[in-house]
Image (tube, rainbow, N blue to C red):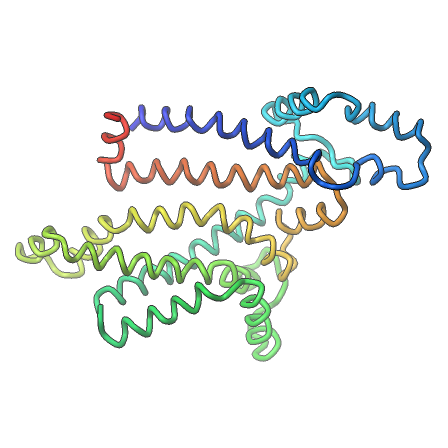
Length: 310
């Protein structure tokens, strides 16, 4: 396990450097200039040259890119062009609300998706299985920019049960969490159902029942562990996607997270802040892939042995 973990971390580091370098190159691709944004259209050429020198924009592309990558790896993510605040400080202020929303959405998806998938698998081919899978398909098909306003309309305006915007309270988290986790719960339900159907057809399931173990114990202690590697894969890969999709959900519910920060930075063309947000979203994918691989080893130790031998 230790050898596998160290190897995966060492393989991840070059990918991090490549991602940071790619994000650092974005400023040369997007239209517009930070100098024009800061000084406006009526600045003199002397003022423009002085600002370019102070921002380091007068150096070559490779020099600027090398400086940016080194700075990010050392904790210097630059300064916001408009507010003058450190990009890293701004990200730290907004990342906690986004993580809270993402984790609560993930919990919502697992709590609803796994039992629905298991129940559908146990009634495979029956009308209940069809109803549950049709419901999960509807959830997968519902985009959050449509589901969010619909939930607001029903539970906030018509029924007056839940607030639209109330960050920091449990009631205020329900609608954003369901909006963000609704589609994922449908995916988890369908994946769980397929994995459990395959697992209960294996010999260990019949053998455990023949030895006198109860059906519920075999299901929750053996079948779900056998099927969990596929569910873990979906959850791990979708976690990074939730962070990026949260941009829309945070805008709908006025959630003070990274999505709101990035939307504001894009509208104001604050390039260093946009780069910082993109790096965080990219790193979330890399980190979750790493953690998913490590969880694989705990769920199925054969993964560790296969990686070491090959």
